[in-house]
Amino acid sequence: MSEEATKRAEKPRKFQAIKGVRDLLPPETALWNHVEQTANTVFSNFGFGEIRVPIFEPTELFARSIGVDTDVVGKEMYSFEDRDETSVSLRPEATASVCRAYIEHGMQQLPQPVKLYYTGPMFRRERPQKGRYRQFYQIGAEVLGGNDAPAIDAELIEMLMTFFDKLELKGIELDINSIGHNAPNCRPAYVELLRAELTKVKDQLGPDSQRRVDTNPLRVLDSKVENEQAIIATLPHIADHLCADCAAHYAAVKQQLQLRGVIYRENWRLVRGLDYYMRTTFEITAQGLGSQNAVCGGGRYDGLVELLGGPPTKGIGFAIGEDRLILSLQEGGKAPSKQGRDVYIAWMGEHAYATAVRAAKDLRQAGFSVELPPTELKFGKALSHADKLGAKFALILGENEVSEGLWTLKTLADGTQQKLPEPEIIEHLRDSLGQL
Ligand code: HAM
Image (cartoon, rainbow, N blue to C red; front, side, top):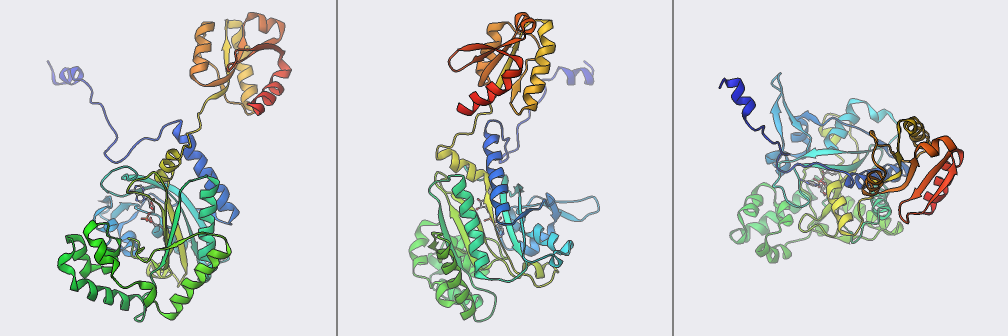
């Protein structure tokens, strides 16, 4: 056999999605759409406009903003050399890109603060498990410019809670903290204190935490390692070591949350895994997610725009893990809305087909979802097809209906049917679907 013939004889390879990435299919995608539309509505109500940023950026943008020692930049980015030998990376998050765009488009000239939101895929090479994917989706928002009034922090969190409330997401808990700022009498002093305390017990810590005592002692507070918990519980709390300005800011954020009726829990161990944060940090957990239960994370990052070459600019934002949000909604009993069809057109005979095409056009124009089979089916087959598709009505068009101008409409739930003159069909469907 020639090489060409051997190739043809081989069974073609079946492809599968790469580990950690997945397809989203109907009817589940209807729930995704519902979530995204709710975000559009709620965020617009709070004065946010949508921004769309690129999927890939210079690697340096993420390294500089998220931090080279973080897990995200250190080991999770998908980076590659472009043909001109610059390193680019698939975005692991979008805050850095939004700040880049703010600077690039001179948005400091706009009325401040600028309020932006985004939805889309992010990429991190993490170990896949329930609620953790290598391509995952975020819905995020950023407030850039203006001042750092605690009301901005509180209103942003209020918006989040309004969004979750609209979606009827159950069992959510909001944790907040302040991690101070980078002045000698604030976070750096606390970090040194923490390092000193941790050094005393270093030999009782696991390898990750031992490393972090040197590189980033704050991250030890994040540890989930069972036998480190008792040690961590004895460590000093950052709230007792904030400078006066940060302490006042934190107190005011809490007061502003109370004013808005937002229920929160203070969590002194909430430090977040990205380097750009200062002062307010927050995280929201939801039910039914196992160990990956953080459905949203965010915080203030006042120095970031300047770090990326822009003017001194205040900033705060959050990102919701949409995959986890959907999982939690499903665990809470929110079934993906069935795509279904309003009307299935069962047509019989060449003569009826032209009428069926016209009926489909008119009904779709009127806003109904319509299925028109492309080839003629026997009556019984057509009805069972309509059933399988979850259609609510079958519009039956045969020779008689067309010649009489009286169309048969069958309600599939109870099998009743009636004949109606063509002009009355749309009105009748509107009334009945309104009641279903
Ligand atoms: P983050 O905490 O890294 O923050 O991610 C936010 C949320 O994205 C997480 O709480 C989680 O729900 C979801 N998430 C993260 N990694 C994965 C994954 N591998 N699979 C599924 N979901 C995941 C940020 O990304 C910041 N940019 C948030 C922010 C915006 N801070 C200020 N502005």
